[in-house]
Length: 407
Image 1: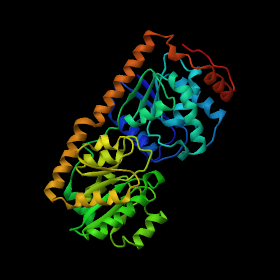
Image 2: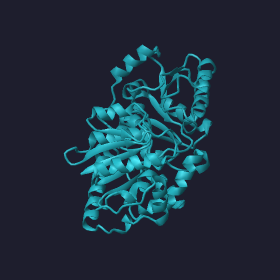
Image 3: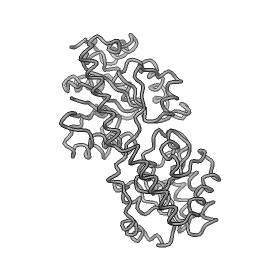
Image 4: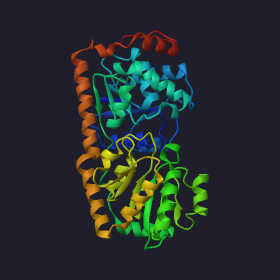
């Protein structure tokens, strides 16, 4: 079965990393993947090519809308003759549906929505327009996959309706993210973190939705109460952000370590005792939470997207943007005995192992793809194969040609 994965970019991000995990896990003897990016950038391009998977790009600039790119997408996809086009996130979802009129009838299109949507005004102007266009196009995809229940409900409320709407959570690599305290001691020594420190860490790129400012404010409150606490930030921008830099020279001086973007997050997590996700909006099923839990860490997360569903009873969930509550949660976990923290972390890892492994998630995608392929082979004139006139007209205008009903 040939699968074309269409994604905006292959920079380090939740959706992009989930795609890589899925490519690593799905049975290549059954599923033959190709990856197409809208924008030709990101370190994960080479990661995917190292898996022996072709990656090509439409070579768009960020924010660009290009008829040339749509024509190139149509050419790539028709040449690939995929059974499934799996698109990832809003821009790729829309691009896949605009190409629909030129694709063979046997090709199914699966949309993937990777975030919650609390306030559309927080998105960039072009992204807002793309999200709104999705309300028209979503019913005509073969399936609409959300990575969280909250996301599914929010998008349904704004008109993202589809006869096959389902939730497939993120999956986590429990063999890669596993407890290794000896390795953690090595990392601490290399960083100069005291042996007796209790390290609270967060792995996230610097972005307003991640609310690093809120994390730092809560850290300062908790640090004033407990001299054992130290703090570790991993992620793109954490070494250069002015707010974080000010914290290293201010209330968290000598107690905050910043590592920037790393390709060995699984190793850096070993140096942490308690993991935090402080996002204020936008999360669907956060990778950082599942990876920390898989590593055997108790997690404190804000109640955004399906964070509470992932954490369950294995940590603490607090309201977003509530710095005092976040500080209290840090103090509460820090006050536990070493044995109690270890037990909470072990329970967190077991929860991921039972409910959120990448193998379990890959099997759900495999089942979905088989169902769609069997359906399209058995019903070539499926209703979902007839896009709305608005979609066809818009796509034809953008591509500069007439749609062809290929068989």
